[in-house]
Length: 210
Ligand code: GRF
Image (cartoon, rainbow, N blue to C red; front, side, top):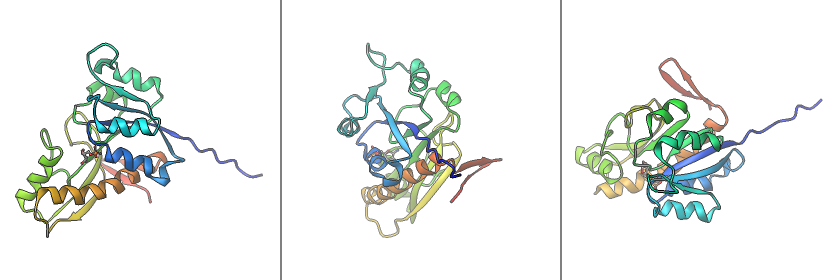
């Protein structure tokens, strides 16, 4: 008798605040096509370009906020439960995720950071600020980190990192460009591993099974 293989499709919510190039990389990943479905793209900014990318791909968008018709932060966990979300991906989302969501989705929220954590991290360290700090430090190597999200900025356990040689760059913008190309590879890779249940948390370390 042949065993029937059942593929369970992982339901994902992607949080964005800006341009959405990482969202695009997830959508364009051939490996992820059969493994995940993006049930919602969520933002604190109704006019962010990432929403347009979602809409062009027939993905529902939802805005967070206090006004009528928006998802209120205290209701976010319930909303994510109602969509049966198994993984939350923060792809350039700039606001803090409420503590109750972090607790309820423990080890189910990942963030992409455009530098090698634990350096160049914390409040205010986002976007070009990160790359300026890296440039001004004269670091010769930067990179990308994908990590689990905990209650403080950029301190959750690291899942995967990739280095980028920046020894010959002339500006922070050049670092940003190089790092972004690597982000677009590393984030889909980690999501794929998560969907295949190949990310293990053992004692104080995270292990990704190849
Ligand atoms: C990326 O550099 C990501 O690492 C950071 O915010 C940026 C988002 O870019 N957290 P995009 O919106 O995915 O193009």
